[in-house]
Length: 250
Ligand code: PGA
View 1 (cartoon, protein in one colour):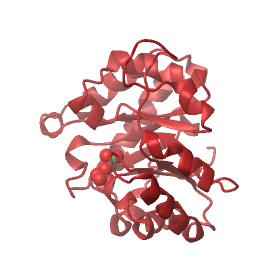
View 2 (cartoon, helix red, strand yellow):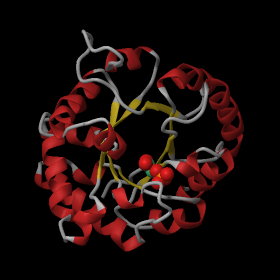
View 3 (cartoon, rainbow, N blue to C red):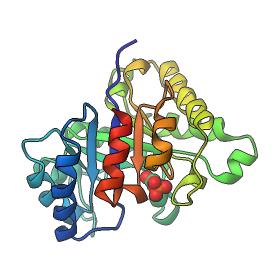
């Protein structure tokens, strides 16, 4: 089985001004200098350039939190993949549950966004995850499979390994309720199986867990064979806490 490099991403959501982003990067870089993991910072659109410039010469990558599927056009307020690539942004979060729930992001739009990101040279970090109701109803696998099949429908099987998947159970996001290590492992292994059935080199795909990951629970979650990293919200806002999670990943 190929070794998968751990992948730890900081999803700042709608937090941090440009000045605060700069301060964070300056505080983080010396703390993670020894890491072998991929470390990715996902600031607001406005702070992307500042973070890109501050991390130059380091291995830290920068991701946007969303993008439009078209390259340009009459879409007031939107940002496209080529615009992000021009800034030397390397990746983009797609399909975060907050975008699905609050901004009407659909699986059909994601089926167009994922290939559009790859076409522009951006690494998609595709988020999938079930609601509390779906988990309680025993429908977790059904929801995950439906999201993956639809969202990745626009890709050839050979492209699937270029996508990072984040398993983010909605009931664990920002709630302080973390999935158990067993729940995270089970869901991430299931996601890998779905990708394998879709013809992907599934052993090469990085699959992350997201939902109240913090320094005290990170090592436990990340020790699972199919959990290759984390998409971290609240605990990514503090450089010391985030560095603690990077350290737990090795
Ligand atoms: P959280 O957010 O770590 O604050 O739960 C994770 C996410 O939404 O990506």
